Every structure is written in C-alpha cells, then in structure tokens.
Image (cartoon, rainbow, N blue to C red; front, side, top):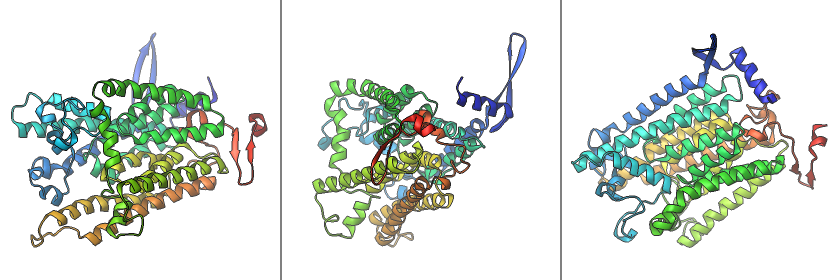
Length: 485
C-alpha cells in the first residue's frame, strides 16, 4: 500500500468529503459500513437536473414544431443539429454512416469521426420501425437526448472523481460547477459533443487513478469521437518529460493508439471515402461562425481578413502551433510543474480561440477542464455569461439574416453579433490568463495554496520530482535524489 492509498483511507475514515446514505454489507457475519462519496449523489442529481433543463430549453422546437420553421428555430433559440442531420445524412433512409452515401456533392455523408457515427447509427436503429418519417425524426432526437443525458452524468461523475482527490469537498463542488454550468446546459443537445466529453473525462480520471493503459484507451476512444482530446497527449508528454515519467506516457499513448485503430481501421479499410470525409471536410471549411477569422473577414482586416482557404488553413494552424510552443515553454520553464488540467485547458482554449471554427456547443469541451484547472471564479463567471450571450446572439443573428425585417422581432444585427463574438473570445482569453498566472505564481493556485497538495489529477505526476527543467539561461537536468535532498 502506498502513501496515497493510506491518505485516502485515512480521509475516508474521518468521513471527509462523504455524505448521505450508508450501505450495510454483511460478510462473514460482520457488518461493514460504506459511505458513498458525496460527489456521487450530488453529481447524479445535478446532472439529471441539467439534462432536464437542456431538454426543456429545446421544447419550443421538439414539441412546438419550430424545427419545421427555418427561422422559428432561431427565433426560439432551440436549434439542434440532431434532428435535421437525421434526414440530411440519410439516416432516415436507412443509410449506415460511412457506407452507401453518395459523394458529398450529391448528398451529405456523415462528417464526424467513427465512434460518433456509430452513436448516430445506434439511435437510428432504435427508431427504424417507426413508420411515419416525421415521428421517426422526433423519436431519433428523443433517443439521442437520452443517450447524451447518460453521457452527461458519466462526464460529471468522472470530473468529480478527479477533483475529489483534492479533498475538502472538491468533488461535489466540481460536480455542481460542471453539471449546472449555464453554457453547458444550453449547448448540451446541439450536437453529440457530450459523448466525447464523457470519454475524455473518464480518461483523465483513469490517469489520475494511476492507470495509464486505461487512460490511454479511454482517451483514444474520445479521439475516435471528437478530435480535440488528441492535444491532451501533448500536455501529458510535456509533463511526463519534465517529471521523467515517459514510460507511463508511452503506456497511455500505446493504449490510445490501439483503441483508435481498433475503431477506425475496419471502417477506413472498407469505406475509405466515407471514413475520410471528416478529414476532408475539416480542411475544406472556411472561416466559420464564432471564429476570430470570421470576424477578421467581416471587417476585411488586411492579410488575415482577405485570405484564400489555403492561406486561412496556414494562418490558423500556424497560430495554434505558435501557441503550442509557448505553452510548451511554460510547461518546462514554470517555477513549479503545471498541473495536468491547467495545461490541458490552456491547449484547448488556445485551439478554440485560434481555430477557424468555434461552434456554440464547443463550450461542452471546456467546462470540465476549466473546473479542474480552478481559475479565478470571477473570470469563470464572466466566461459563462459570455457563452450564454453568444448562444442567444448566434441564433438572433441567424434570425436577423434570414427573416425579413418588420416582423416585430428583428433579431440581432451584424454589429451586435460581432461585439458578442469578440466578448466571447476575450472572456476565454481572460480565463486562460488567470490559469497562466496561477502556473507562474503557484501560491495563487487554489489547489496548491495550502502547500500540501501538488497535482491530484496528475496521477504518477503527483508529488513526482522534476527530472528536467528549463530556465531562461540554461537547461538543467535534476537527478531525483538531488531534488529530494
């Protein structure tokens, strides 16, 4: 039994972070009492409430028929991709994702990674016996919402389990902050992103539990659902390099590669064009709603606002590459090794700020990491307010674009939309800056403020001495025993 296990058992014996109902388990005539962690009950209850609130927010569309009114779904701010893609991606006609779809110019093949496509197929299969096409589309949405609600519960509990290692009730607090995030509730059922969020949260929880193989498998499955968890391996590599834990990183990466290949290879070999659509579609997209590049294009900013698609891809990927280099320097040169959630959050925030696409539902990716990174609470609240404003602003802007003026509500004009877009960008940049400040000044970090906690989510990185650190003047290799001394 290692020191972490002893500390955990001692904490459980004292009842810290534990509440509620006890289970009496009879074994060999002796009664064993077990108290469930507080975050379990709180997390499930808060997640169910969030799932119901998200569902209620879409009721004007799902029950009121606004989905069949192009502008009505924007007026009522209840748009979702789930319902229309059931038809446009021909799931309603019995098409299996990646197989049997026409070329993109003649139809609309599934443009998502494989595991998300299989989730769509599972929901489509569940409603295939419904005869009426309209009712079948609504049922497809209902089944998908139920599946995503389960993903929400899993993601919240996994994030809470990771935070629980901090002690002091951090687990149930994290559960509440994630589940009841206004931005997450509003965006929960726009797309299938909760599936990727749940897998990613479980992967990080497995890493925190010092199970690198399992963590890698779960993160590999997450990458097979949405591509963004791939960048977290960059965070792991940097931190494992600094701590001399490359063997554990290798296990996680190998597990991820095996899981990703197991999901992708069968489809890539048997339906190559359908499988490759996600990658081709990502390259061919221009500056889209919500991105800084879309703002640049609207105001014809020299160079970056008048670029071709090839130049846009170069600018966007180049800017993110620069951000990754800066984050890498921060990871290796900070006075104390950054915590894993901090680095993951910075990478993801940089990606979204500099990416050419920033859809409203991407807030789902960020919320668990923001909660684990523990930035300043005022910055977190400002960011959430900005996400709510953008959620309302994008649909109001669409209504303004497609509904002729004079109907009472004219939507949100172009100028106001871009003000809201800029506020959203700046609020996330401000949130990220507070995380950077916590890394540079560890005494500001709310997790490390007591001086007794290092990186509870770091798994093998927690309390590990530095083996490699970079200063502004030289590279220093630290033998573990020298650091310990």
